[in-house]
Image 1 (tube, protein in one colour):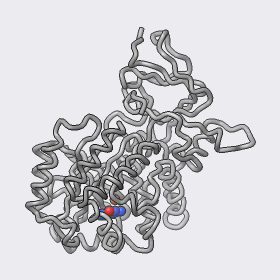
Image 2: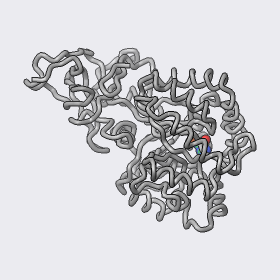
Image 3: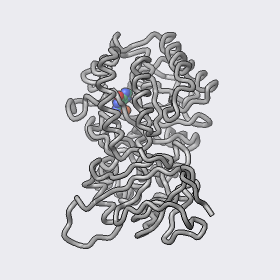
Image 4: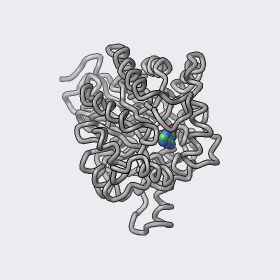
Length: 425
Ligand code: GUN
Ligand code: FE
């Protein structure tokens, strides 16, 4: 019999994915937490859990916490404006000048304070986060995130070329600052982990990439970056890296593209066939960021194809290429852009449905963090309890319809409880 204070059951309408097209719905069911790990989800509580504490949430929806595989914390202040340019001009005009401000501790504290507070209230329980090149400000961000008890991977950004002087490190400085940052943070955090973050190939020289590859190898760090987001960017990488047959190969040459190096690449809007094959072969995760891809007119990533190919795919807000950090919104955007892709571009690529979008935001992206994003036995117990009474409707609705309405109409205010690895936050 299981009964101790770190074990409990959540009672409510349980919803979780097992595969992209398999959604489990249990009306008035139970999801069990044993020391932070899910013991499974059940219609009736198994006998071995007799006497366990049951937190009864009535008619509310109980879903796994949502995973944001790609966001930029220092772009918080850019949300919702400056959407008139494409990627490279957007970076130069809006993004780099904003990121420069994080050289100042005072600004970093103020802006990252707002960012972490909003993230804590959001549906996100796990996130991969870019900071800036600034070591001190990155530390401020990590300190603030640690207090939220969310599980996050945070990267000090590396940039040693093609950036304004105020946001460009020398190759040696970039490597040295990264090593110093990694050293300083050792043993400091329980909930925040470091992730190597070369911004993208145009920002990082071959020599810096090689050094980062060596750091990755010696410290076994995960890696996050951008890949094949925009046609102008892709053409530029061809010029910058003539030895690479395609964009992804520039990361591969540095040993920073999966294959023993846990890697997540944002966008992959216009990946060529060889690149898709390498993503698959090396087990690289794709962070699909549909709202950003609309805002920056980047295009639509072929997510149906990626799912059919069996790639690892999750969703990202790409704050502030994406204006909203809500992963509810990321799910509805993913469905909507897939419909446009199908209608306008490829009638063989059927649109994503609600189940698939939900999978991407939970288990699909969650796998980057480990056994995350499901209520199958053995998964870490990340939970959102959601009230949807306030999203009015006059008629009776089934659980799947209610989930769909939360995805399209819900926001942070609909979250009544947020649990990460068994701990209420
Ligand atoms: N590629 C390089 N940097 C960035 C960034 O900050 N946002 C997006 N969307 N793409 C990038
Ligand atoms: Fe990004």
